[in-house]
Length: 152
Image 1 (cartoon, one colour):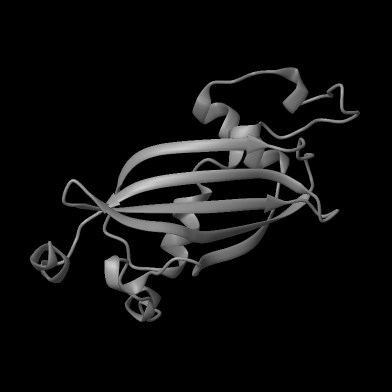
Image 2 (cartoon, helix red, strand yellow; image 1 turned 90 degrees about the vertical axis):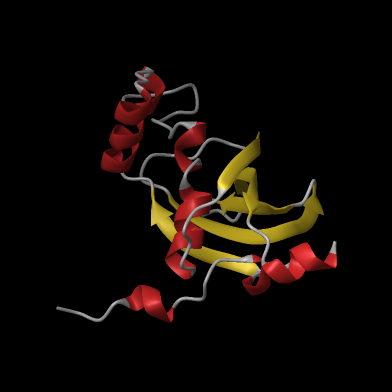
């Protein structure tokens, strides 16, 4: 049995993150299996994602990266959970099945509103050609510590 690597990760809380900090980054390949699992999960069936598209070959659904922001955070922090508040998406170009993409998550904003801590993350997805594929904004509520509550 191996050691628990999660204990080596920093705790995911107000004190452990700051604006501009890279939450994590990774490369993934948009395999047919990854796409099929996503399509099954969202009950989608467009042929563009399986056999061909107006872009010359099968493409990945644009929302295939939807859960990757939190997956990347979880790879690098011990996160108990957050309350998802809102999302924003910008799609620059389709990602191709079989393409290797680079994902990077950065903490873009931290603020207090109505006594709660708020975090805004931005994930950029870049294709193997170096061109942007998508940009995702993810806003969540974080618990404030007693220190931040006392400063109000």
